[in-house]
Image (cartoon, rainbow, N blue to C red; front, side, top):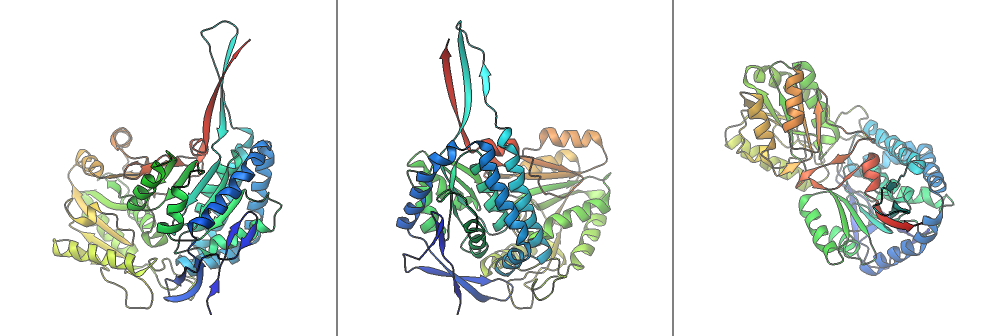
Length: 477
């Protein structure tokens, strides 16, 4: 019998008020491991009203008091790392080491945001009038909503929750329908604390029901979403009715440029690390590789060695695998179609290229050589362990091809030339550029994209201030 999970509303676990539920499946075994409610609009409203009622009192607390609650949450997380990590691995499919890292990183992130309690700053602005003081305050928005993806489901709770709470907002979180169990565990940790009721509410549900109701709710002041471009556009459309703010981290098609003067061993390993992490299911990992023609064979051969050596499988049955399954059959089938199309269009499969012959949604680690910019595999988001490589003749060509994309989240360059690195910094039109390293952001940075990769951003000071609005006061003395 599958375990049934409940919502966390107004400080308590709520019985399901709708008959609609959905199954949760282990992607490595294809077995049903639970079921969760597809929360209806009425239940969403109850959660939002609880958050709205709690917000006034929460805002009145000194920021350092709010930070104290955040530190209680992070301490609870650290006491339950193994239990949470195993749950993430079971419902999402990443290796246990990566799941444990995600849990610890979540606690670190919450602590980092708690440190901002004494650093939230306004401004004093010079006035044109005698005896007048102009002051700019940063104040909370009110009720914020966080709609989560499935690829780093536990960490994304913190990314939506911690900056909201420390700045005085309350929050309603919707977990991904693929991975709601870890969010339920997060709720259990909250229930053991003395956090005021209604400050954090956690719901499960599908995007078309629960997510839509949250996005169009008149009492939600900000919707923060991480996921696909198509879903982000629907959220933006739903939020537009009430002119609700949106913060959207969407898709990516990150280019990596490898020049002839690069450390080829470093470049191949960095691209590999970026691509195989979480089975390539990251919006910021290297998705298309542009290599100067004189070193493209050397680079491709070394990358292929890494990919061939990748151990993959059920991460709970084999704790030493480097890669688990894709999240579901649809994700695996999409990758198979992209690889098959590239092969038909003339790409050479150096390794992999097939659905793995085993239980679960596995796809072989794959390297494609001889790719061209008109291939779908070089233009569409793959979100899997496939690396397409295209030869280029210059840095200028590499930058032009890199920028020729509807996405604009992350990018990278591998070179020993300071001039080439500086040119890339100037000319690459992406929210992030990594130089001589894998794609992976820092919590004190600012993770933000351009074009269809999103609106707004997360992390660091600038991510914190996404959860505030300004209030100008003109005080005549």
